[in-house]
Length: 399
Image 1 (cartoon, rainbow, N blue to C red):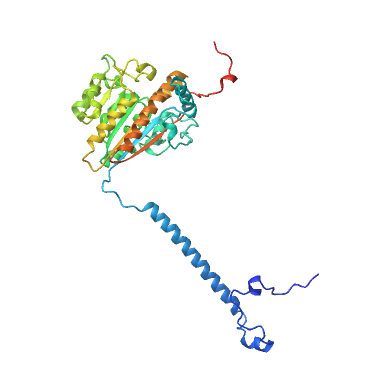
Image 2: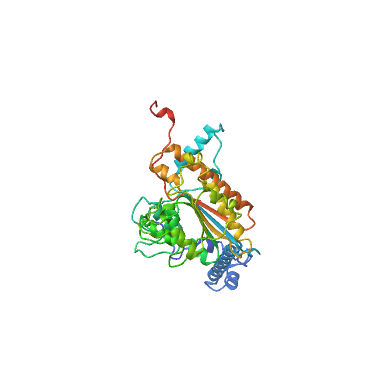
């Protein structure tokens, strides 16, 4: 076996970082006389290595700090107002978009490459479960949206311990923002309710109605509400009411909290697209849900569409905040995509998605053209109905 030196030299010792000052012709005695004390060469190497390491670390830290500073430090604009529009396509999944895209291409004679407005924007997917179920409902989903906390199915902005959680709309109102809700279902339904009320179950529509107009611990937090669900605001015993008590919420809202009420299409048209809105205003244009778009379009003289209500709310809030230091928060929901999924009605669903896409384009154009910095966030709470699409050749022949 070969003998191994007791102290083998490293490659750096065989080829020192600092060249030896001895000349090649020096004899052994001269070398001994001029060589540094034992270990000094190794010490110099260590010092140089540590210095290089510290210098490199300093450069890296400086580069990261500079980049972070450039990304996060900015001079606020003179106009510090902000608008936030949050859109929810309730019950819409990828298959809903695929079917709607193909349907539109077919009925309008468009090329296969034609896409929806929604398709032209960044999109992704998310896991939408609640605190007590792998499958969330709209109440738990909207609680997550509004409070940033997961809760159980049916919860209206309360946590699993039944304690209320503050919502983004309530926070916006406290910060001086104007606020609004626009839906095509009952204004007391799960999604809108989660932004302006707190109850332990979504079935408590009577209590939700009262809280939405201002009968809650925080008082009135909404400035404009447009949608359906009139029956929850009328006293029991009157025509069109579905309340369990005799409270006239419409009258209470007007007398106690100063609301202006619009109860039909004529009153909606009197708002003139948002130009003539006296805040606070709430419009309830159907006893319950506004009809599916496939039916509503034939009754447009009775019921406004999602895009019409969205345009009215946007203009009203924009005008109301023109001379304000703060902007507005507006939640817009394409509510009945979900309902079409529940009853497995693809004909109704594609038209609901098309109307939502129209409203999305309207809001996108508003954000682009607004003089105030505005942000649009759009999402779905869950998919409904298990819709799937396939090539016709793999399906049985239909009559």
